[in-house]
Every structure is written in C-alpha cells, then in structure tokens.
Length: 195
Image (cartoon, rainbow, N blue to C red; front, side, top):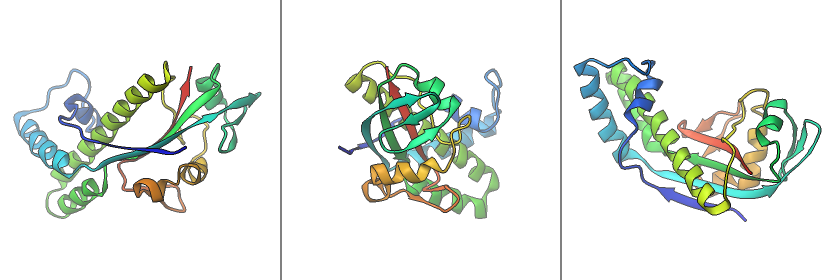
C-alpha cells in the first residue's frame, strides 16, 4: 500500500546549506553571505511544499542480484547496503515546484542569490529526507542509511521502476525525464533497508 505524507520544515540546517555552497566544516562565511543566507532561507521556507510517498516491499538476494519486490537489479553497492535486510521502505519526496521558481527567478536577476537558493533548496530536501527517515524508523524499527539511484553502481534507470511502483507522478506530482532527471529538481527517491 502506498502512503503519502506532507510536511513543513521550520528552520533550515545552515551548515548543510553552506556545505552545498562549498564551504568546509570550519569555514565561516562573511557577513554579506550570512545576510544572503537569511534572506534565501526565509523565501525557501515560504515556498516549500513538502510531499512524499512510500511503500514497504519484501526483498531477497541471489548473490548481488536483488529482487526488490518492485524490480530486480544487480548492484554490489546496494547489496552491501541492504545486507541482512528482508524488507525495504521505498520512497520519493519533493520540496515542491516553488523552489524551482525561486531559482529560475534569481537566475535572471541575481546569480549569487540563485546559487544560494540552489543550496538552500538542496538543504531543504535533505532535511525533509532526514525527517522522513525518522518517521520510518519510528514506524518500522532500526533502518539502514538511505540509498539512491546513482549511488555506487546502482543505475539511474531504476528510477523508472520506482516511479511506476509508487505512482510518484500521480501521488506527489514529480515527473521524470527520459534522462532520469526529476522535476521539481529538489526531489529525491531512495531505498531504505529495514534491519
């Protein structure tokens, strides 16, 4: 059964936004960047439309060939990540189209603000993924780290099967291009092993 969720993030993880901007863990941004971060955070939080859909599937492994319950795939990286798991949570989530609109708007009038919007949008969807994983942990118990298409040797083409299995476009409005890029761009699909 596919379940859907909506959410709201009250405050962005600023260190995550800075990481997406290329700042190291100990680097402190100058005052102008801190001010720009605050402006962008305010706009990104106002534009968020957090949605997710997910389902639980039984899985089995035959060597590194995995039957994920919705598709079969051969992946050494995913096999290692899911070792010992009998079930997974498959999910898709998005921060919403409003973030894409902000990035497009500022790309035309302020490239520096557009870059910060990109980073803030990425931090927002990461925060949403973390919140979802905490919900899954409360519901299903101890979880493995989430794993997405494109990590290690897990092919991007698996996105098609994920979209079909979760009816992602119908459930939460994310579309997938022929090249496996998602719109809205601040969207994620992932597999999370249930220990």
